[in-house]
Structures are given as structure tokens and as C-alpha cells.
Image (cartoon, rainbow over all chains, first blue to last red; front, side):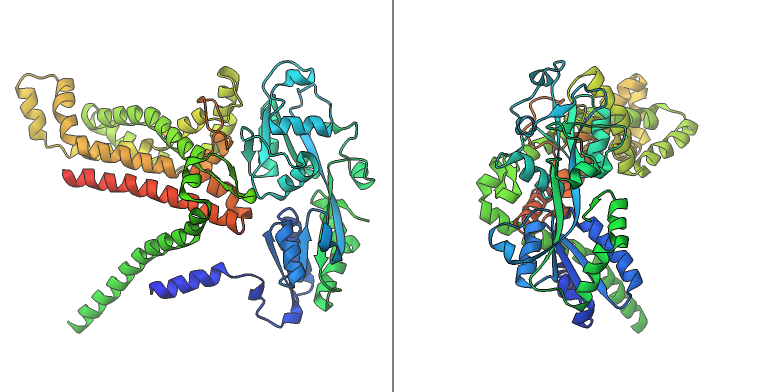
Length: 264
Length: 279
């Protein structure tokens, strides 16, 4: 019995794209970025409702893992929340949307603008007091996302270059939790997806540019990333169906409703 | 007879399956986590505080220390409160009051931990931030919330231990001229001590293992805490925070964190069993 249960556990553990036991032509596997994952799941759900004969499996794992899976053909589509680099550029890339990362503070905080450099200094722990930015002297409560989060990955890529975030930074495990803490703590600073900013927190401008949908679309807002689907070869039949759906007005509308900025 | 034997077998198998799930969990955690400890080296794993699993740094010292400090804080708050509740209920209160109060305390145990965490975030954390300073999400907040959460465990097991002391002891002590308080302090408490220690150890186990409420109020920073107002990350929060997105080495690192937690909780439970058996 133990052996049998163990076998079951291992089976569950290795469950993945291979679970597409049906006819291979009717299963699409999307793997990669954890930032794209919730949106891809939403799209897959609606897509499968309209096309019951095609099954779309969505998995996380991170952008790099997704790109690698697409390169090796383990997944039909890789999902990436970062740009392709070096040899990865041989893959076919299909941009599906933009996402801005808003830097948020408490509404009572007089801070209105930060440069990327200042932001980096705050998150590495070199600037620990608001006084250093010409504001009333109070300790800065830095709020970071958890290791493995796609938003954190993008923030580190866009802002931190190679520097590590200070270990003194607090960590919350979702955009919502970061927003909740910043809304309550007058000394805090954090970052969330731009679509999720509401009036309980204040999004500061980055080098003078506000994180609006328009500024994100026309590239003037610096903390911006693209969500990509990548694949090794031109997508096959069911795969192409899904990609077309994502890029269709309906698919783009779903993404905008979920807080992203459409690619078109 | 035949049928009796058959049913016995079936029941035995069913009983075995519940034990085998424990065995499976143990095997699974160790299989998944041990390779990482080997990869990082036991010393780096346990004696470093640098946790950056996607950059191959796996040091969990700060989390071990934080887990122990949070538990200690919960004990400092929960044990005196729980024990005095238990003594009042078992020794000094009329039966009617006891019949109302005991189920009330047991209700505390039924409140989901996310509710405790939520109360902590909206009520306790701002209080700490405004009156004591710091970000509010802190070791102190976690210790207070956990101190309240372990009350039902401590109270109900302590009450059972106190009521198990034969009334003969009490009568004898009072016949010798001791007051009721002297009787409780010198006779009943020592007689119930192993049960009370078991209660405290099981409360500790609950505090070490609690996750949700701690994630919400502790702040989860990776730094080694230097004050009770510092945000901290415990072993359980580390696993729950990062498991959702972890893959490869990172995932193994979280299972390795689970091994450490497993060992700590095993030690606590074993010592509880030993203390009870000594009686």
C-alpha cells in the first residue's frame, strides 16, 4: 500500500504537460512566467469554453523555465514577462500585452517623484530614511515581493540591475497584500502591477512620468514590461487558434479588464 | 469467527493506511529536501542567513532564530494567561461558571487562523506602529497573535491535568490548615505538573507550526532580528510564501526548510510524550 501511494505521489509530482493524454493535436501547453500565468489561465478558461475540443494547460515555473521549455519543445508556448536575450532571440515571439509596475506610497506621503537611481538606492538599503530625499525624517519601510514572483523578477531587472534587495525589506506574497500594507503604513514604499493601483495608495511618477495606460503604451513610462508568448516553430493548428484568440479584440479586452495594457 | 477475523484484518489495514500517510509525508519531505542540504552543505544551510534561492544562496539561520523567538514570545504571553485561566476554572470557579467558560475557550480554537491574522493586520499592527514605532509588522505582533492562538491548547489540557488530581489531596491539605491558594500552589500544581508541561509543549508545537496568521503579521523580512519591533520571517512562512512559484533548487530549498521544521516539531512532540509517560 505504501508503495502504491508513493507511486501515486510521484505520478502527481511529475504531472505536467505530459498529462495531455488525449490526441496531441488538441492539447496546447503554455508554461512559464508566473506573472503571465493568472492571465493565461483566465484566457485558457474562456477559450476552452468556446472550443471544448482543445485543451489548454497553463503552468508556472518562471520566464526562463518557460523559454527553455519552448526551446526544447516541452511546451508548445513559453510565457515570458521579460525580453528575450542572446540565443533566445531565435524563437518566434508573440507580444500579448504590456504591464506597468507602479511604485506606491501612502497618500499622506509628500513624495511625488523618484528617479530609477533613487529607487534602487531605497531598495538596496542605502537610503533608509525619508530625510535623505528631503522629506520629514522617518525610517523607510521597504516592501518587496517574495522570491520567485514575476513582478519581483521584472522589478529587479528594470530597477536593481545586478544589486540585491536589502534583507531588511519586508516581503508580502501578492500585489494585494503589498497595497494593503502601503495603504496602512505612512512610511512605506512598495511596487505593484499598475492596473491594481487604487485611491488608497499613491503611485509616484518615475522620472516625471505617470504610470498611465497611455504612457505605458507609448514607452515613456520606464518601469514597463511586455508579456510574450514564445514558440520554437510557427504554432500548429490548435496552438494557433489559441494565439489568435489571445490577440483577438475579445482576448485583448479580457486582458485589459484584468488590469493589463493591450498590445494593439 | 471467520467474519470476525476478516473485519479485524480490514480495520488493521485501515489503521495502517493512516500511519502510512505519515510515513509517506516523512519520506517525501526528506527525499525532496535532502539533496539540497547536500548541495548547499549543512553548515551553509544552517549557519548562514543569506537566503536568495534563485541565486543559489540557501541560509536559513535567521529564520530558525526568528521561529524560535516568535515561539518564545508566544509562550511568554500565552503560558501565564492560559495557566491562570486553567487554575481559576479548575479550582476557584463554581461549576456553573466553568460550564459556560470552558466551551467558550474551546471556541477560540475553532476560529480559523486567517481570521487571527486579519485581526492582527487591521488592529494590532497599526497599534504597534503608532505607539511603539517600527513598521508594525513585527516579531512582537506575531508573538501576541500566537500567544492568543495557543490559549485553548494550554487551557484545556491544563484543566484536564488539574481536575485529574484526586480530591483526597486537596482535602488533606485543607485539613492540615492550608488556605485554598496554598493548597493549589503547594499540592495541586506540583501533582499536575507533568500534565501542565505537556500542555505547554503542545502549545509550543502549535506556535512553531502556525503559518497563515504569522505570514500576515510578521512582515517576512529576511534579516536577523535585532529588536522585537523588527519584521521577521519564520520557517513556516518561508515555505508558504515561496512554494507557489518555486521550481528546481528553490523548491528543494523549501523542502529542506521543511526538514528543519519537521525535526523541531518532532523534538517537541517527543519531549511531550516523554514527560507524560514519566507520570
